[in-house]
Length: 418
Ligand SMILES: *Cc1c(COP(=O)(O)O)cnc(C)c1O
Image (cartoon, rainbow, N blue to C red):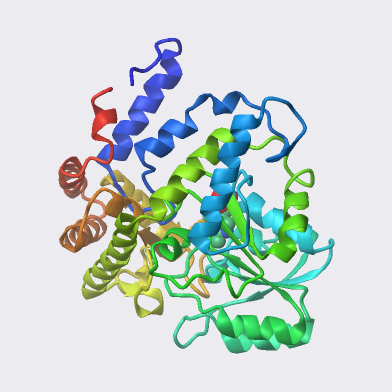
């Protein structure tokens, strides 16, 4: 596709970003490379259509085709996650969570959620987020001993606070989340159970993480992380909650849905239902396990001792007690390796500095990298961080990172348009 020449300033920057994404090792755990089909749907004329409401019940005319698209997206989401009902309109994962809170809670109601510094998300009750400001969140975390979700603590807090809702799911938790024991706790205290699968939706679709849909009342997720679709959110739930979820989404929170993004979500759901995607999901986990063991061999401490999913949380202190997450992120950035700083459980440093980094393998696996490539990446990370102040090492590592990426171009066709 030729690029429009009407706005050089913007399209020049988009081309630079294509180049950046093609020449750096992208290890941000929440990022991926969406397929050309997903990009095409996102860039389609559906962006021109107003379609407030739901298929068959719109406020504007001209929605015959859009209705079919949104229905297709909803059906595919239900099939993929074995759910009764789907709402594919949330503009983002955070909005999907807002919708679920709006559907079940009143301001001031009590909710149990995972604390931010143990791996939870901002929308799980952080005081700087609407969730922590409108609702009374009580936080659970991971145990000191094995750094897994502390079920005894969830049970204790559930009996003490009688929450209306329990939120499972995380943004920096490297292990499989077992829904069943928390379902039992929720039933004991009469709480709604919400599973926020933002990060792991693709792993669930690919069959390498148990599907929480049957046990949880509602499952929220993003479509752009491991699921590899367009940037956005979605909700699946039991049919008894369908009405209140839909009402909370529209007219409760959003106006017109992004039908171009919904079309791209439909494309992504179909892609994620293929055998190829199951192979992809298994390779994501194989890659993160290969990467974590190579890093552990070099003195890094993986939080919880390893990983079951697409992400690794690294405690940097065993490698270098003075190395902060902030510094590691910037050193690696200069070396062409993109990660994010992250707090580790009970971190003594603030989230802006942090003692850890979070690493994910969803994007590099989409590029076709395998376990051998992970050993190479681990070596690059170690060299960059061991010689933090040596510009020559950074340049050498950057060069090798570029070579590795050049051998696995994520968008060969787009590169030709630069
Ligand atoms: C990423 C994430 C979200 C928010 O998704 P956005 O699309 O960034 O709003 C919500 N919950 C969890 C657990 C996440 O990891």
